[in-house]
Image 1 (cartoon, rainbow, N blue to C red):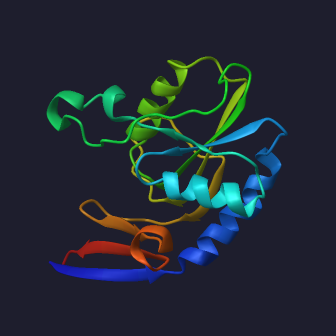
Image 2: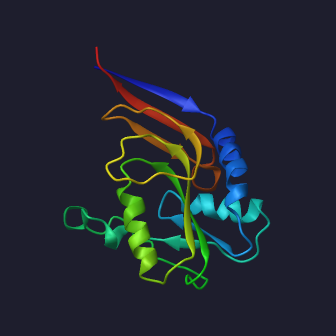
Length: 171
């Protein structure tokens, strides 16, 4: 078994996602980043779209169906600086895999109220869904075999924008 890596242009993926988001934006659309991978994305979009105020942050840690085995995977707390009731919410995450994190984020969001609509935008959809959750906007679809990983590096946290696919090749 060999390990292979493939680097993708994260800036191009971000630009592709940004183009797709335009049709989802309403005057009262609130950007919410899923901790931890989507927070930088929501913050960057908030600035790039020229939106005033802060974006929201949603932690899925307490609502995960594997909480008992994982424990508190994140110390990030949910922060929603807007009234959820009647809002159009755009959840943002860097990588979509099984759908369990998004399901947990939706459960957490429901604890704060009832939005008019919730959309989902992701930088990379790697497939492998275990739940019927599909994004409205995707920067790029990639096929990552079992055991593979998608690592996202961003300027805000890592000093570079890059998406790296780490795959296990069977020989």
